Length: 96
Figure 1 (tube, rainbow, N blue to C red):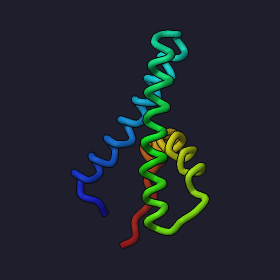
Figure 2 (figure 1 turned 90 degrees about the horizontal axis):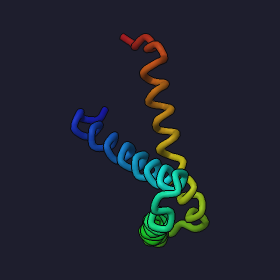
Figure 3 (figure 1 turned 180 degrees about the vertical axis):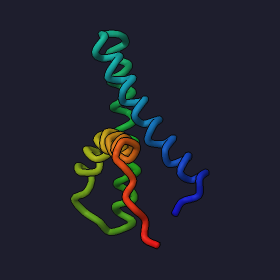
């Protein structure tokens, strides 16, 4: 079980990433600052890839870089769906 403060911090990270990607998509879709949006999204992914590559090297892992880039983009969507599902679905009975 996480403390309430940790739950908030974890939620804010996912929400901020969702807004970041969403704002980039909106800027590109409405043809406003397309070059800037693409450059900023690309720079973010490069920074993420560099950091993840360093982590992979330290953990002696291979072949995770491409999957991590895909997962990084898809995770906010998955987290949002899971959050909504947990709010909509009825609570299961707890063990006594």
